[in-house]
Structure formats: structure tokens, C-alpha cells
Amino acid sequence: MWYRFQLNTYIDRLNDEIIKTLQGVFLRFGDSKFVDTNPVMKLAMLQALDKLADSLSSQKARLMANQLASEFAKRVNQQNHAQTVASIKSVLGVDVSDFIMSNQFITAEIEIAMLENINLIVSVAEEHLLKVRQVIHHNILDGQRHSSVINAVSRAGQVSKSRAKVIARDQTNKFNGALTRVRQQSLGIEQYIWSTSGDERVRQEHRENNGKLFRWDSPPITGHPGQDIQCRCVAIPYFESD
Image (tube, rainbow, N blue to C red; front, side, top):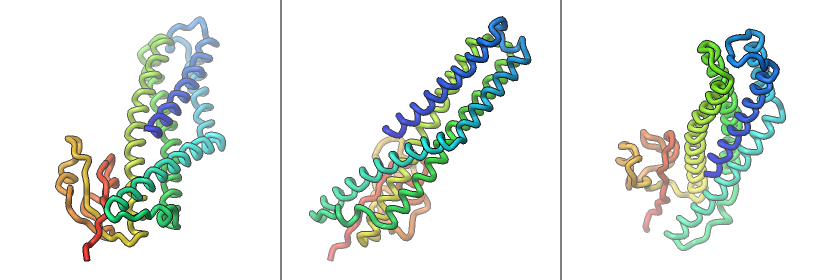
């Protein structure tokens, strides 16, 4: 939820900047209420968006994406550590928190998640700007009013938020699953029991995996829990009895 909120806030700020930029162009051409009546205005709008697009690839924008991805990785890592400790303690009665706080494999997974999400955050903004350019192009062809263009840009923001929702959920599940794997393996746990979320959204093939035993070094055809897109399944550590 935190990551989704942050991505939505990012899109809102970007959309506000886009609308502010377009309104500035409209003010310069106050005598034209329709976007198709002045080719100079069309050019000004597209040039303004190009300038905004350039700012997204700037060092400052990249730093912002880095900070957001870093906080995302930190939060998921802390949550996964607590969940892994609790799941093992419930079975063995042993607190392993100090043993799985950090190692080279956990650090590597954190770095991977950060790099992937920096690129995803930047791509969300770039794809949103592309949608806005398409919106403006269609509105120019249709001869829409300035207000219609602004409303269309706002609607494009909602579409981008839908994609952000998918990204936030999918990346959280994937990263959580990857951390679970390296933490269990670092404790010598070689097998796990597949556990679904138990609701109607569970895929049929994942439902078939539920309750079955799998090895970390031999994933099922679906991949390990969390690897499939938006997979919410988890790996319960399995301990062989003597």
C-alpha cells in the first residue's frame, strides 16, 4: 500500500506539472479557445512537453526515483525479515533474527530490487507523458476546447495510476518472495510448502500447488511463490523430522 501511494503521488505531481505547463501555453494564446485553431499553439504545447520529458531524464529526477526505490526496498526487507523470523519461531521455537538480518545474498537481492524499481519508476513517468502527447494529438484533430484537453490529461493520469497499482503489488510480491528464498536458504532450509492466499483470485495452477512440497533448487513450472506476475502465494519453511 505504501509503494502504491507513493507512485500515485508521483503521478499526481507529474500530472499537475503537465496541466500547469499546458495552461501556461493556453494563456499565451488566450484568443484561441480551441486547440486546432492555431498551429503555433500546437507547436508550443508539444515543445513544452518535450522540455518536461527532458527533465524526467535529468539527474535530479533519477535521484528522486532512487530515493523512492531505496525506501521501498528498505520497507519490504524489514517486513520480510520479521515474517521469516516469526514463521520459523512458530515451528522451532527459535529466534533466528540475528542470523538472517543481512548477508551477501540478501544485499544482492536488495540492490536488484532497487535497480529494477528505479527503471520502473522512470518508465511510469515516460509512458504517462507519451499518453498525454497522444491525448493532445487526438484533441487537436477533434478540435476540442482547452478545458477538454485538461480533462483528458486528468483521465490519462487515472490510467497511469492503474498501471502503478499493478507495479506496486507485483514488485512487492516478487521482492518479498526473493528475500524469503535467500533467507530460508541461508538457514539451510532446502524445501518449502506452497501456500496460497486462499481466495477466488488465486490462479488455478497456483491452487494446484497449494500444500505441496517444493525444493528451492527445483522450482515448479509456475516458478517459486511471488515470481509469477502479481502472485500473492508464500513459501512456508519445511523442516524434516528426525
